[in-house]
Image 1 (cartoon, rainbow, N blue to C red):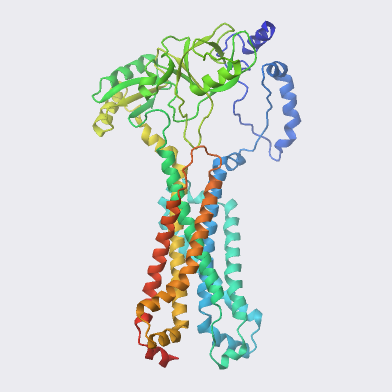
Image 2: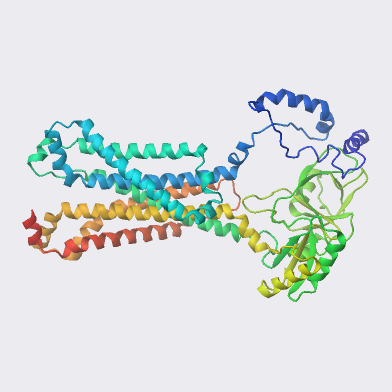
Length: 594
């Protein structure tokens, strides 16, 4: 109604573009400093009273806006963000897998030493050592080993300080702050408890009679279980690394809807129009520059929002991502096709994307499209009759990165004056062309403008994804090495335990290849199942991590097959290398030792 429209204009104030009104200026992010010990929740009633006193709540509700302010602790703002939660989940899974693989390998090594230490432990029992004493010995040894490991870990971290801080984008001081040290202490305590208690229980089971006869190692099930889990963790991390690398490439190489490979630019915020024009003219004459223009948004990051209204109505239709203004060559500059209508050419003409056109047509019930239709926009319309005409519809484009994509409909206004960003399309991204553009910028104002390539900006925008990828790569390599060490130890134990069996088989005509085949089949059955479990687990972890993203890489079956074949080939090579000597040994030597 006209009354409602008048009320909306009153709320907007005499200057619609001003910040001194409630339309479009009701939801800025603000910071509030509280007195020490104040609970933000205790101020809820006070905030409600402020809203009732200062906000035109009824008018806003009649316009379709229901707003309420809350206080959130700044300390929790970063940790509670979806991106941080995803990163913490991934790195937590990687860290847990790496620690678990290390602990399992240590336990397997200690249990494998049981055969050589059984007689000594049995003698201790003969002299009165009880279960507590045996457990104490194991705990003491584990504590010493863990202390040495921590010292070596600290030295390694200090030696690799620069790459660690680069990958994690934080300092070591922040990583090992007093607030986070309790996590490290708790982790070390849990590792000590598990790594000592399980072998301790195995050592406690040694009978006293071992002191007077040979001890037969019967911990094969224990060792096979530990080896199985190590291979599962190794295959999980390697598969997950492959999937995340594929997803990273999918993100970086995803088509945003505009041509960015040959775009460069620099900000001109705060620069007078005369200087902006001089910059534009200067770079346009550089050899290798195809076209130069200006725009208020680079398309690389999110944008501010504004509300869409219809003339004569007060109801807000929807909120849009406002690309603000650009020159008339915007579509040519970015390589964005105008699929309906024409390019804008006057200040009262706007272009919208397909999403905007579709949503507005659905809300208004239009079947003839949006071309020629007039709208009001908060911040831009200075009065109820200050309308803008939609003259063109351009292809949907992605504003921001895939990780932080602004999915709102977009609108673009025409401006004949230079805007906030100077954007240049070059014929080829060569050092000579870039150097020429930088020289042209410095010729207007020396050392003030820094040229940015769109390709490098997109690369930098995915730094968090690279951090995850490189962290999993490091953890995956270490876990595979741990699993290989465990396999080497297990194979050595098995060849030693079955030396007599191997000798008898050779006496009965078995060839070296047949002997090696026995061990490969024995370990192969376990390894195949473990690799399958790890690959399946990585698929579910990967799917969980990407639930909130629209752009996802498809997890192909061939990738899991390739990872499985590669891991099994490495495991088989290790088994062959360890079994080669015993397969070629003289059976008489083995029987003589028995």
